[in-house]
Image (cartoon, rainbow, N blue to C red):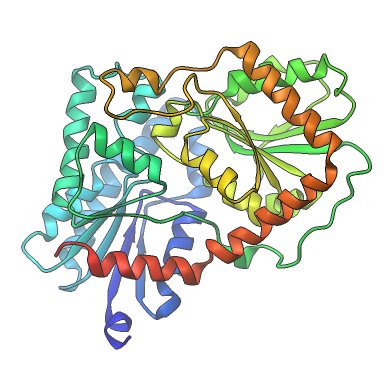
Length: 402
């Protein structure tokens, strides 16, 4: 234990998000010294991300030039035998940090929040397996090869990253979870005598299945269930305007995303948290907001591949329902065309039917809704709390190749 108290850990990411600071609190549970390294606050990031022109360009300069310079400075001046946990935001930052501490006994752990180039391929910004994708892929391989270890957010992300790119020296899967100290520890009792309220809160970007959400909600409002459910969205991100315009005229509340403290209070009034990932998006990330919704006592309705880490999180904990939006129920990583299969969507008419049947079952079995809300609330506290995550992180730091 004395050795762990003497350990100095730097955690680094270009933007200081809530889950980034929670990582620091998790590592500090047993007395480990933790120093966060970041350049842009979450508030400044969300403000600048909505802008265009010079403000947007300056944000990119901060994230991809100024932040790496800060990271290099911290790496060079850090004490020997330190540990750096460097997130994939910015995507080349882990191997950059390793390069500048390679002559010292300093470990660098690559924390994979988002996988590149997969993220920008799915967003349609570059061609899959094109020249630019292959160039960025070489950096991803360098992160795996040169860092002392890699931490993934889920087993599927690990399998996909290693099947497509390469295996790291050592690897672990550790949940991102959420800071439970910011939530009430008493389960929020909420009547279901009236409408069941479904809430979407947070980013709706290119990795999320906005189109299926729109079509499924329209289908529901044309059915006999239209008076049994209420939807509200707290939205930001690249597809926020698309969803708002597509659902114009429908009785749905849509407002811009609010700050985290307000959101944590608001979700006490909702029954179900709606989350989504495109099949391709499931190869890139796991929506961190899911853990926050679960911590707040919301059951989860996930429109995502049943094989994704998001789908597994919901189903293994009996914390909600999954409407499968993938064309395939399983993925064979050995298949020559698995990268194509992994992106394919289920036909929308089948998805709409599944969505309707799922919500019909929820409306007919409200006791099951309460059970799943309780399961979601408890599993975050029992399985993904800071103490248990700390043990996993310390084991990772000890086991990673020196």
